[in-house]
Image (cartoon, one colour):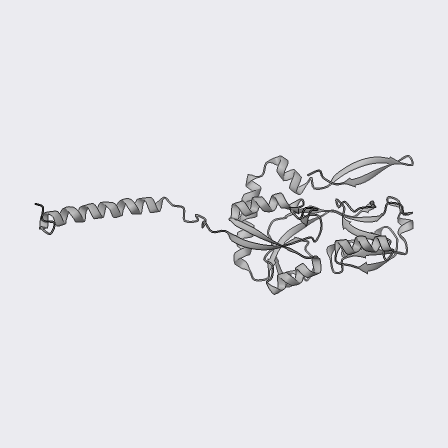
Length: 277
């Protein structure tokens, strides 16, 4: 019979234990320091600001930012909670801490006081001026725009771009400040507005694009001071850029807007079309 408390067997036991601990330490050292937790972090995002991220007819999340966000979630081990909101509501929700990520956001003076911007561009968008299909307004007929009422979101980048665009093309207008996309469409239909500003790739029922404003970059933002989430966001966006193929990169950063040249009254006109999904 073996007596385990003898000096000989105590020594053997200690040696085996030491070897086990060394082996376990070796295995542990092979686990990456930055290995992601199995539990996903929930990120709250507003949906419905424009067609870059919106609810489709079946209530599913759609839009040009959706595939990008899905890839970003996979890299950062995120899952999303989408919250219906227009622009003004979403900005307030970010300040109040009721959402975590706000997009699309352009860099305008003063916004850095309440939000921190991603270090990388999230994509590009081009606002368009829309009119009812059966209206008198034609493509780039700026004289007819003079004295019109244009529905636009207050304190938005579109509002600033529209001001400069009107000066450049020598027409005056009266802004009709409306935040909701649905309410802008309704304003066109009931005559409260003659024209309305939407993302140029929007499909607005019963309407037509009569001008396209300047293309500009947009960013993703977090609440001012949320450095940990901003770090995750920037890190994930940089990793995603490395993963993207040239075709995917063009689709996100250079191919969001598809144009078609059509001939109207002997003049070639550039018309913005919706990208097929």
